[in-house]
Image (cartoon, rainbow, N blue to C red):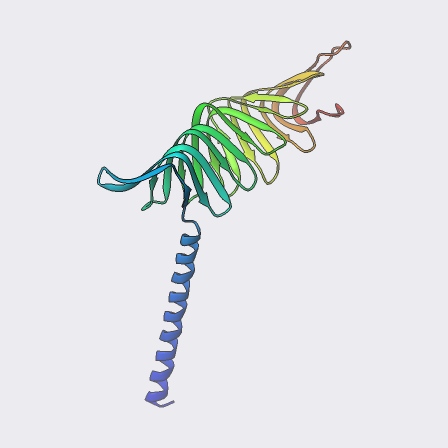
Length: 234
């Protein structure tokens, strides 16, 4: 192989690497742009500087959109440089799998992570309602959690606990600490419990007590297993 052929092969290899690099950069830029939060409407909008950062202040019937997620609020601060929002007032977030309600939310558009708080923070997927006073929700993966006490209500049961984790794709809620499940026919007390909402089945881990509330009262103690809240199977 002569020197000219060798140089051409080296140049071709470097050119191919450069092309791959620019294609990767274009893909990353497109992915980032696809996550950019959009302003759909507001009663008023003004640009202000806060701590040396340019911020857009929006007031009155504010609506934001990011891909297939919408956020509604009374007022907001939009940090365009960081693609994030501080929203205030009557807040509603409509995601692909759930709706969220609260009084304040900090939303990071890059991670699609919402930190929601208020007198009553509520999440619903159309089949069950979860209420608490503070919740973190990952709209990218449809996973929510609370650490300050909460309640889940569906057509069959009411569940309360100190901590809770909701997995929308699996329709599963994981409860931890002081878990109480109330059903018209019985009450269950446990430390750790999972609840599958479509089948109304509970999975418990650790000491659990089930007390029937009917005429033929009974007590069941178990430390690991499952319980169908519809038909009473254990």
